[in-house]
Image 1: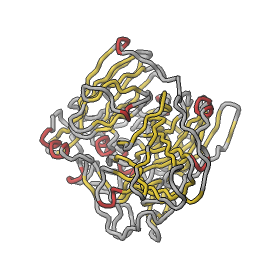
Image 2 (image 1 turned 180 degrees about the vertical axis):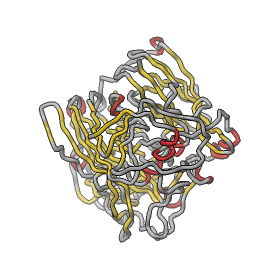
Image 3 (image 1 turned 180 degrees about the horizontal axis):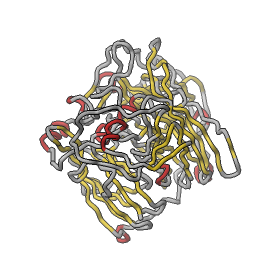
Image 4 (image 1 turned 45 degrees about the vertical axis):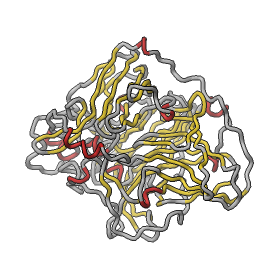
Length: 530
């Protein structure tokens, strides 16, 4: 592995992922139309290929990656990033960018406190960056957007003009040739993380093409609860996509090579939505269950689509979705939902009990925010008798108890649309992302309160730390805000207060909107922890 710390010039960024030059402008007129949409912020692509009947394909379960080395306190994995042709829609071959040849990528299973090293080899046609979303990860392995892994023989494309023309550079970027090792201490609560590409300005199309996978952290607290496991613990990565007439993934990039002009076509500036709902890479799949208790590990891996999930039996009954965990691990006690909203990058740990249903019954996991075929996600089919299990009423007692009075700093951030020279973009406090600028400086160990406000839907993600939601819209948090989170989904015009403690690692980290198109078009900022 060859690494070099390199000042990344403005011209270099234009070839391998560049920052938008945007002026500080409110963009309220731009965002007003999107704010009126109750379900999502974005526009939907229409597939041009015949789509399969819902619930006609089985739910695939991502394979678990085996370590290439295993020691007393650490494990090492290897992943190759490469293009493959795969069958997403039945009978149709689709070109994907993948981790180790599959979409989603292989799942990594690890134990709290056991150091994990993942060596990534880039055999794709563009540079990449890997971010372990939700990981308490040192800065040098957090996947900073300019810490690129270059493919073999990479040469910078020639570009004329630019996006604003100001000399943006990153003196701290670390560029690797072909391979890079990421180190994850994983000294954190048991939870489901996910890893994905995080290259500056091209995160959205890279994830859309398939660069995403799951990573579980286990610990003794979780193990003591005797929660459903094996085939009764089901990972569900929900992600929408669209397909062109040849069965290839459709995406409205201004530059389909992902090496030059950044952004998407005008109708999709607020976010790209697909008309096919995939779960673990399969369209509207079905999963066979028994009459027992199941644990669903749900990730919204969509670029911009929001969901509100509900489980509806074929006799019309709604089954409870019992939330036992959030982004950063187990709750103190379960929260029962008849429906559950989930924004991009949010994760929920849910229990669902099929015990009151007869063999032969079907349960549709539906999306209340979807219309047409996007109102369906997947189906469960009860095919055999199973043994019941109680839902524990006490879960974890290790959640942090930060108090508002302990906060060293209270900060305000506005997430809004903006413009530059006739271009649309997305800004934090009127500024686009610049890797050469420090936006927030926090002291290691300090507790802080952040007050966030949005113009349209913005799922706000903080790297490195988990946080608690203190208030939403000036009132109490909503039921699904329970527990420790790393992403909070704000609705149009909504505000929220969050509280966190910067007690993990020092260095340069990020916070940003996880509507991936917003992120690519400037809605990201630097957090320096000293």
